Amino acid sequence: MMGFVYLGLAIVLELLGTTFLKYTLGFTKLSPSLVVVAAYTGAFYFLSRSLQFIDLNIAYATWAGIGVVAAAIISMLVFHESINAIGAVGMALVVSGVVLLNLYGPSH
Image (tube, rainbow, N blue to C red; front, side, top):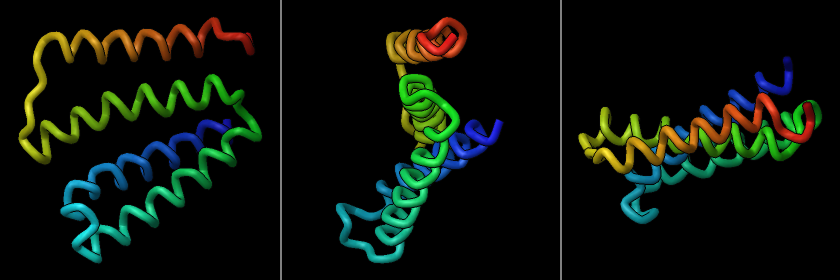
């Protein structure tokens, strides 16, 4: 259970860092750049902690899958970016892959 708490924190921090990347304007703005560095540092710290409890393949696939979908949703809600039907299908396939790996991956 603790592994997934750490993984959840890693995902939240990675999404925070990714969102703030847009505000850095190519790392020309100090405050958002500091948020990015701090968020990514925390994200990798918590990802490493999660690996004490969760296999790397499960942790990374979960991180990446949730990150892809959540980043797309954030980009639509915060930055008013759009996604087309093919993009939505691609995200559904990513989520399906993560679910299958979590249910039937090598550690099960």
